[in-house]
Image (cartoon, rainbow, N blue to C red):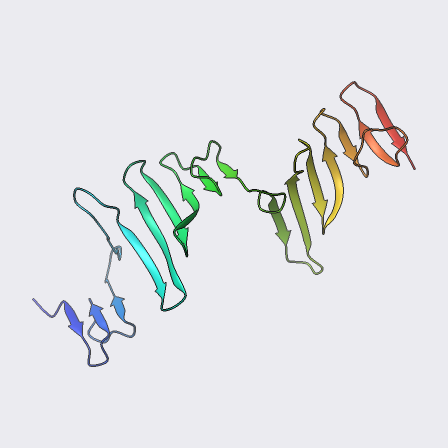
Length: 178
């Protein structure tokens, strides 16, 4: 059997290579190259990314609910993938495939951006704070809204027939005004 691990004079560690080019360099010929971080009976396996003075970010396996969690500086969980594959951003208990939660319009919005062709478009789907409305914006300008009564509003933010824009109200009235 040949050499299986090397610590080079630079301090780089090589597993499966005799010339490691980074602090930890693994190389496998044929097959998967797996890095396994495990605990046996308690605790959580974690990968901690630490910058001296700047703090640490962690990716951890939560043993109690079988979730993969992503934590930023200050031990604040920012995202999780639960055991059912649901993704939660801003929530530790996602109840749909993608669940975004935040304390204000911006942090609870979903942004869609295409970057080609130029110019790009940025679409944002935003729950409107304290109104129950859902707004759709294009490059920061509101284009459409579904209000808390179920009215579909295009180019206006109120179901009033005095406003310019178009709408389909929940009572069946279709409105358009220029």
